[in-house]
Length: 238
Image (cartoon, rainbow, N blue to C red; front, top):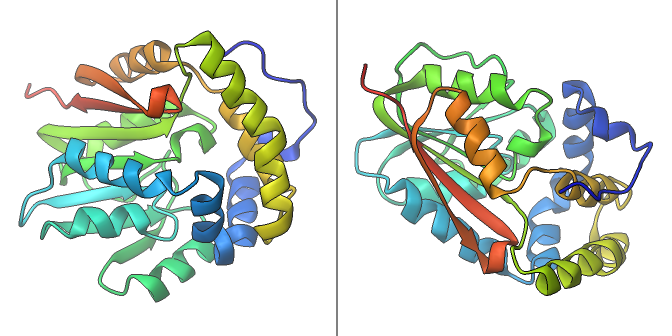
């Protein structure tokens, strides 16, 4: 999108310490806020993520920006071993309490602390737009994925229908802040949520960024009219 509002929001610099601090403060009520802000669609989108990944018993999956582990847990239902990685200690603490079956590690997506060719699949759900260097993170995810392994990105996107896009934007700018003021532990942080979504590339642009990072067979499909999109890609065998 090119029509995002100008802002002095400190989080928009996306410095890792600022992003970590933001999510530390919203961790306790993050899952509740997600359910309310999306009208329960967050669970539908998580199931779509799992289907796109196609996790298998015995596979090793890295869930980057795992937060409280909602995405990690739904991937692990298949019998795959899932490691949740996040930059926020607060989010990881909540995740460990809610999903003791998941292994959580503190880490920065731009410098993943894993060996090359470690994972059968790497996922990132609602986290890519929070990373200051998108291409660096995508290259790191490529590095730690086995040849032939897959990447799945679930992220907010741009509804292709202009009328629906206008309604969606109005919802983000009015309804979401009102809900956040009532239910979030840090309503001001949700100003960043809205502005980061409005500033995020559309589906085709993100697909090109993923390809330029070295991934092959990049494809996407829209969720809920393009409010969100799933991008899927494969690490080259060579």
